[in-house]
Amino acid sequence: DAKTTQPNSMESNEEEPVHLPCNHSTISGTDYIHWYRQLPSQGPEYVIHGLTSNVNNRMASLAIAEDRKSSTLILHRATLRDAAVYYCILRRLGGAQKLVFGQGTRLTINP
Amino acid sequence: SQTIHQWPATLVQPVGSPLSLECTVEGTSNPNLYWYRQAAGRGLQLLFYSVGIGQISSEVPQNLSASRPQDRQFILSSKKLLLSDSGFYLCAWSVLLIRNLEAFFGQGTRLTVV
Image: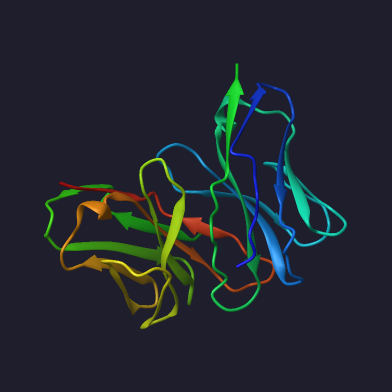
């Protein structure tokens, strides 16, 4: 499974944008970039995914580098409820489509 | 709509006792099913996954086993629990559709082995 690298922790202020980086230099052509987040004492929650093009949904935006070796999850206006551990995961199309979690980035939002 | 049920929510079991955690999915057919464990303060570790009835793949050797007796039922078991089996156990499902690659997680079972 291709590996991702994320900062252990990040901090931001409420109502400001947050950019969460992820490096995945060994990504292959069939790997989708997924982001999940986990709030305390809950199961992970899907945030967004993409393959090559930037993606937007109601929760966040995903910016993917042209060479696909890195990506950035963008929370446009952070709220206190966005405080969570954010996981960047590569998920290969086909087979079991395993989701292998790394350590993620613990995001703290200051009021 | 699809839902995933996982129970119990919390469990305290003595060392050496058996374990059975059940996960069921509603509203979809032939899902991929997964069991994860999260030890206190640690990341999520994939334990087992299944692509069909009776098909189980183990990711790490351990004191646990999994079974899938029905299409939408996934069971995690142990014959004799160890202290190190304590953790937060999560079941998840996804379907093999290119345009629908999300995985959905249950609310988890917090297991404490004493």
